[in-house]
Image (cartoon, rainbow, N blue to C red; front, side, top):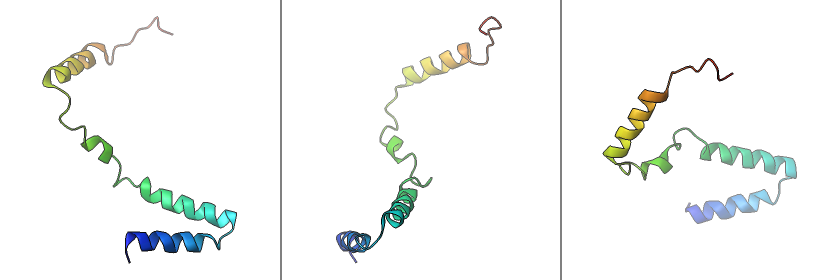
Length: 74
């Protein structure tokens, strides 16, 4: 069955469900979108876009600013 056919079948079946059942189906569908296997795919398109100079600046900022405690901060 093609993607379009699946969508039509799902839409047709959904008309026969009550609101509570539709919420359950919707949550189930969202679980596929929130699957850890799918996470991070948006980041792949950004791979390699940070320059080496910017990475050095970030590393420097982390090394200079992290894990330092300011006792007077609280």
